[in-house]
Image (cartoon, rainbow, N blue to C red; front, side, top):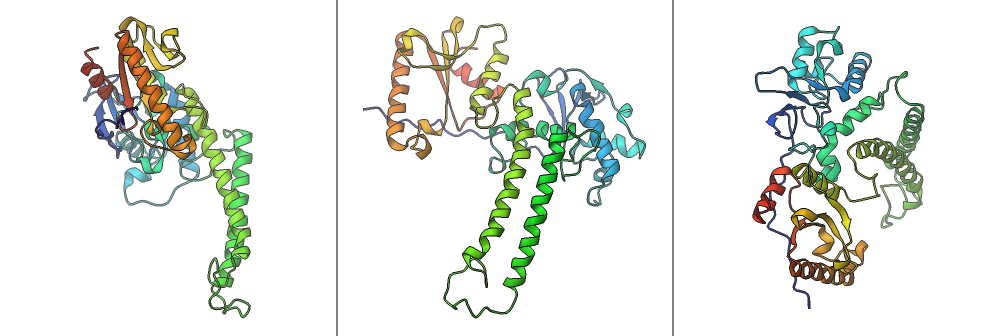
Length: 368
């Protein structure tokens, strides 16, 4: 019988960024200026005293932010850095201060751009998180800023459905129009239902009848619910289309096509061992039909990412029966690796996927 295994003691996840500056040694300019919560742009400095620069790859998105903020002003804010053209919602304070000093004639010429400074160009995740796990999956937590940048690169505001007519691609304009029309239809039906809810009590509804809302039977609310689902479907389509652009740029599969965490782990390993041969989904004869997520032949090192389905029954993965079979395969894999003196590092779903943590795990195995 397979011995029950538990995930490692849960490690603290990286903090959710609320702005500020931190050091990230894996980047050409390691001083990283984060935007405020849910922002879009990073700035990078060679040292704490050096000028803050933007990555060249963000130039078009940055230009579009300037045009969007000049043409479509967001809600008013008492913080002058939030009111300036390069606002401190989308950009770090250090860039918003430049914008505030220059005033309304601000342009990209007032900022310094340099090539290959950012996380995307260097295929490395930021050390902080974009959002809490309640508000996004692993990819959004790790790279949400670059999703925001992609909206802007497409000429679409990050806070509304406003867009630049001469920049936004036709298919995105059409989708935005569909979203707006769906929202209008939903609001019209919602207003109609509200009039019934706050109107006089209906004689055709018994006092003890179960209703969706007051005065509204369940079947009468269905048109409203259908319109809401359609609006949500279209918003999700826009969100997924934009996120898929970013996923491909970072080397991930599209939404629904593959595991984000396993790819993140592979990218970290590739950065730690840039000169070594690294195999993914390695199926050697000696594993007898089993597979290692990552394998480094010269180090005789196998690495496995293990999600929740390796530790507890999950219905979409086949429940308890599938869990038992999976744990038996995991145990057989451990024994085969041990017999051939191959180190096996198992990274479970509770562990933070950061360079520092994975280096610590490798140190535990005396690999580094």
